[in-house]
Length: 105
Image (cartoon, rainbow, N blue to C red; front, side, top):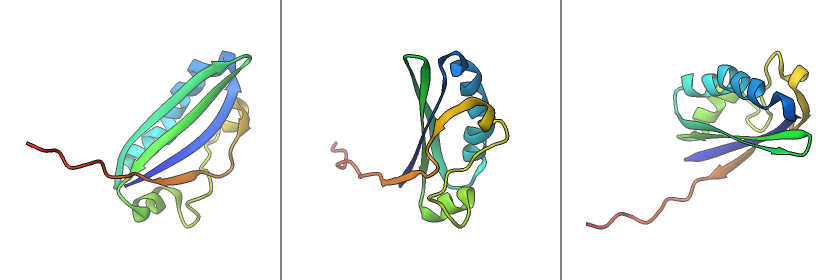
């Protein structure tokens, strides 16, 4: 399994509108892509900014590519991102999800 992470920030006042926008765009697109195993929005207010981490889980690299295209390290943006974001990563990070120990009876 692969975890894909992206970071961005808005004005603190845009915390709720941007959260809704994320769920309508990126999170909906993740969840509609075959091989997506989940997606989450982490957020916090830090001073006058709202910081976001978007975490998505994928079955494998081919599933990531179905969503992100031929350059899976490049962040995917949507039409209103420029209006909301005051800072953003242009690239995403991919992580291998370590398997936990097997459950015992």
